Length: 250
Image (cartoon, rainbow, N blue to C red; front, side, top):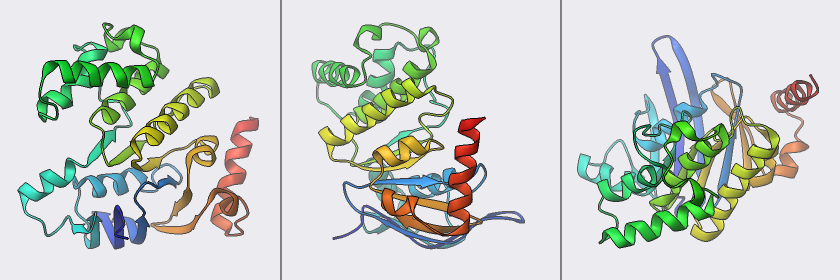
């Protein structure tokens, strides 16, 4: 089976700062792959490489078997059409209502034939994340957790085959984190999408991930299912888990 996403010995540097030094991974169709690592480890860089917004200095990035560095511009745009992207900042349109934020990519990419179809899709998506009552609100009127769920709804609304999520629960309390996790899980069940999830929340990682990976000093030092990841004896993994627990206790 062709991986939905594959990185082959990928290297990426910004000037003298070497961020990725030989990262290889393969994400199967329908898998939720969780990428962990300390701040600045290069997790968002991996997502931008998958999006085709960055190109590797060496190695290959493939979407469903297509090498992003060799495809023509038109094909790259078509491949990006496979993706739904939840940005770390949310990247919401503050002058648009909740409804129109979700409808925007559907309209721009002409993904549905009629305005009635778009309305039905948006309403279905907002119901999934518990935002039906806020459809006519502006993002500024929403809580942090609601804005996060809206960002997910906009990414999910296009019904992508591959969903990229960059730290969707950052800064949320445990109850809101669980609500966002539930929305992600519901989206995956109904869509069957492949998900690459960057997160700093270990509960989210263990709750949602089929496999977890730790990015450390430019390399993936452990890739394993949740229970095996917890039992890892790799020093970087044990230190990462210990530090997270200490922060929770503080």
